[in-house]
Length: 339
Image (cartoon, rainbow, N blue to C red; front, side, top):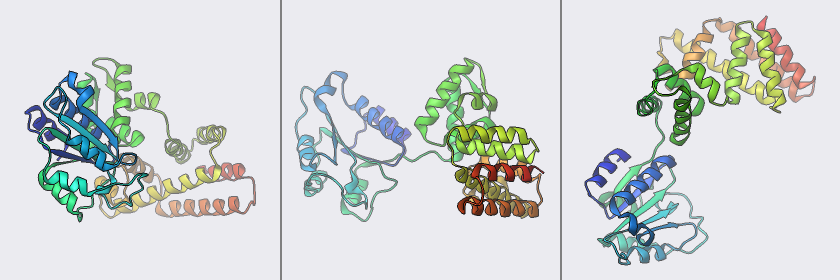
């Protein structure tokens, strides 16, 4: 189940004796907990009937005892167990001794006044375990997984509508390429961008470039883009800026090699009739990265790209063997590439 149907059930007061929130998307987990508390407890009851425990620090038997305790001045209790790694295949690294038999006994006969919430910050549960099978059968499992490429773009567009601004598909893809698909980061950036353009404003790629911090990968892409378009002065300026930020020449060279490998891979797959989405899947790249690489790929023959990769390999060897100053090696290879 995702968070949307969960919220619908909670609004209709359809409660489950226990919930398992698992996944790496912390924002969805926090939203799910907030919804459970909001719809099951009155505001004045929260201080007495809402408890949060950490499995790494509190014995699970103490948590079960709390779950079995009658609510004070209210109808329900909500008990949250964070870091419930006993529901996964991960080795138990808890600092305390747990009696997991108390959990098994409780879920066989849960208190009808308690909503027990297990939070598991892991991608999957260990479904071989009897306790997981029981929870799956009688409780609600909510997957808190990061958005995929397409769903992230749709989410950004919906967020733009909520904030009364506009963003097109290209700009939304560009934002996910820069920020990733983690919801909290996307929320922060979208809210900042919406505030900047104002009601009815348009969030464009230049606006995103202006407000969203550039990553090292962004700078390397710009550097290579300037090289392939013979803008060597701009490429060198980017390189000197990175040097001022103490970025290691070997790391910069490694990222340059990665980008040229991507360009070569994209060019090769395009020549075989692959579409952008298929290429993104085959090379495990963000769709926007494929779109940008395809533009650069048109400027090269395959032999030229292979030659550039050979030059980078040579430069890498020279750096690692101390043949010449690392910064000078990078400057020379950029000049050669531009020519």
